[in-house]
Length: 210
Picture 1 (tube, rainbow, N blue to C red):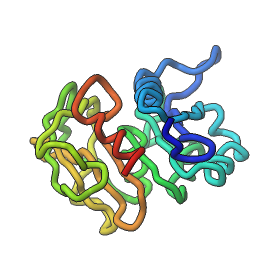
Picture 2 (tube, rainbow, N blue to C red):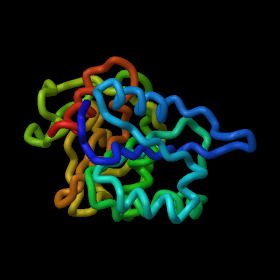
Picture 3 (cartoon, rainbow, N blue to C red):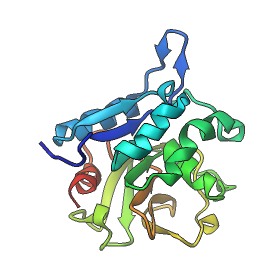
Picture 4 (cartoon, helix red, strand yellow):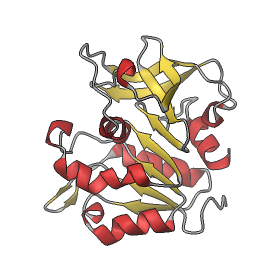
């Protein structure tokens, strides 16, 4: 068993709840299962949990590692993001090691005033991706080009990134794949390292061990 934190790893769901509970989110489930398969103890937080200030404070105070999942299509749009910001904006202050995936990552960068690209280049399915910073902890053991699952239409404009964000990996078509805050152990992934049996699952292993 990997003892990453005393209380395990917090995993936050970006998919909203319906009246009968939470809408299904295959990316949240895939991330949980992938981390558990690597021996991590995972503590899930649903969208409804994140409405509670006590839960948000508990994540900040009790965990040294957290993952914000991607979204399976059921969630507020960024342009209507007041509720999204209320429930997830606190994660920008998270002091521990964090991975922010797909919609979670785009939201993170949008809160840092990064912009969406004007020319949309959707990425779907296995996406060839180039390592730009080989010394980054998450890139350890990956080949110079690897496959990661893509499933997004909107993408972050790399020219709008703030100075304290560096690009770690990008797809062949020049789309940001993995980025990192320079002075913080926060990584943003527009693609899904947790999904399917692709080379990118090594990213999660490195997140736990490096």
